[in-house]
Image 1: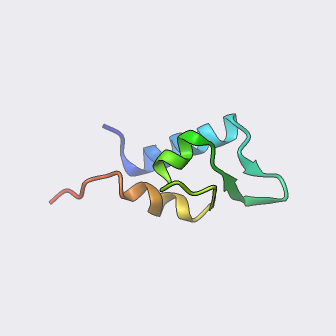
Image 2: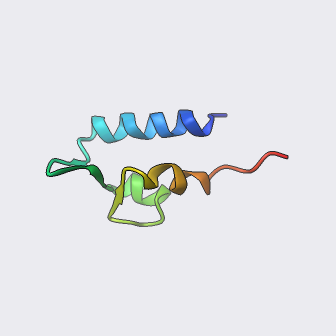
Length: 62
């Protein structure tokens, strides 16, 4: 199992590897099919949205 922080790091690695950052606005990410699957089908997301969008994929521990 991966922590939330670890998941955000892995997503960033993927974004950089696939060159999905908007060159005109580095705080904006273009979503390919894989990212759309985890980011609710959005075409692009803001840098600060990533942790919030990923949180729905984690269960809350009690």
